[in-house]
Image (cartoon, rainbow over all chains, first blue to last red; front, side, top):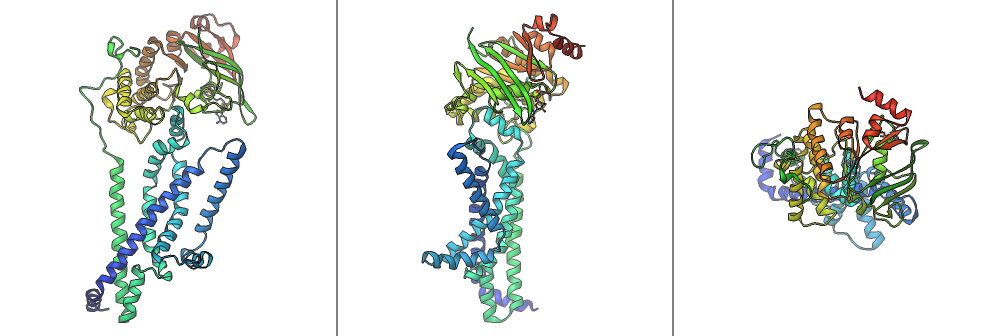
Length: 255
Length: 244
Ligand SMILES: Nc1ncnc2c1ncn2[C@@H]1O[C@H](COP(=O)(O)OP(=O)(O)OP(=O)(O)O)[C@@H](O)[C@H]1O
Ligand SMILES: [Mg+2]
């Protein structure tokens, strides 16, 4: 290998590499966020307590069935194949050409959604049952319980897994070059196709991929630490009281 | 006297295991009722059926004259009228002390935030935890957690407070502070239904003591009767085993 070549390729083609990396990052960010949202929504629906009878029960069963089918299907097929099917299939079935960028976001999102749904489900199950019961006991319905008590805890628990998914997405968007998405792999192939320096070109791509994934990993670690919150609290006014003083009139319940 | 909660022929089975059998029982306004009985006798299940954390298998629960097991009844609205204190505290881990007491008021009762905070601080003051508003649940001792849990329930200004062995998960040195808060609440005229193993406490604060065994109410009456002249053999046996 020659370092000279690497430098030459970079000086000649840096805008293409940068655009490619930008596209990769953009698709991964949006895809991971939408995917995580899909996962959370499916998590909420999957944990709705089953009504005992009636239309509601049937509707919920059907919805749960469809969602499970979605999860299993997208987890059980390669994304590169999904990309082909969705991109060319949409053109055939609905007679319109999906813009490749939209298609890319769509594919990454629903793929991530399928994985995230399982991660979220695990996260919800790992929240202590007492948290649900305490929320219900003060009158919250399923939706309120989820939004105000359970999901904030789930999000914190699944953050590492979400970060992991994000890193996977950065790498896996490379397969979207098959439908002509101009992400980093696609751009690198174009560059190397012109200069025939495959090793040096892909070496640059390699470094760029690593910079992206490693930065994301570091950022997420910081975010995790931040979400732990401060390790101590400040007391309001004076010394803590251990027990109520019954003589103190301010402690009377009923005014 | 006005009945706040009346239970008629309540039964509950888990599979084939009948945990509550034909329970008839009521709580009057302003009354402090303590439920005692050995482990597994169905005390927790009774409380959990009352606020519908468990669905009763049969019978009726009448709250202020309304059958709340009826099809059209809003169970969420009903639950806000019952404050529940758990053995394991169950403070919301994602909220600080103040928000533990605020979130229900704002999201369920639709109170304004400022008003809810005022109410929360009032009841945190009652339990002596108003200086800890910024603390997270994980940063508190067991006794402090339980006092916050009591304040959280009180903040909804319920008609009845249900306590399920509120001191059983506490280290011995913290039991006193929680019982003290509960005694103050009892004195203030709050309606309370308390499952407890603290016999001295029951003797002191209860207007009525209910003894349960194997899913039935064996005997109930004023504490003097239950503790000094129990009428039933099973009550006597239980007390002999526990008081010593
Ligand atoms: N969710 C459940 N599924 C199956 N059985 C249950 C369930 N909850 C309680 N039980 C059973 O019901 C019986 C009564 O339990 P419960 O918790 O009401 O007793 P308890 O009087 O509160 O006991 P303790 O003093 O130990 O708290 C027990 O035999 C218990 O195993
Ligand atoms: Mg119990």
